[in-house]
Length: 121
Image (cartoon, rainbow, N blue to C red; front, top):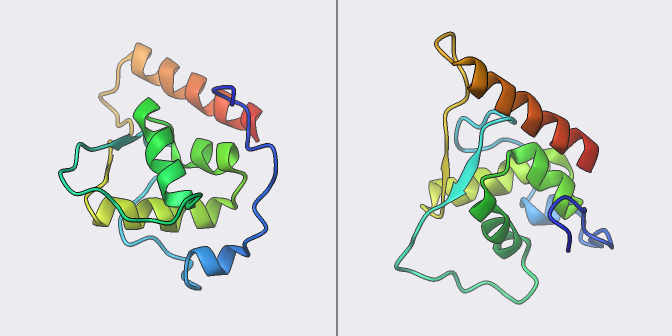
């Protein structure tokens, strides 16, 4: 799959089954914040094709939650809940977003990431 190409076939699994009906993330999760995979000594035991494994794979490139949703063709709310779960379980880290002290280059990078994410939708 191309770096910015969304999944070819949308999942037939209903979104509420992926999140057990939850609509809120357990952690503060800005949609534009970069998400990174953490090195973990414990390997997850998920079934083949589990979307959480796909999320872990994508996060090696530090995408935003919006980019994760677009690339996996899942609703944004589902991506937020699943990413939040993975952060709480110690598989992922949420990086801070920009504040008033951000440099021009940091702001430009955020705009670029946002545009790439929007194009992927």
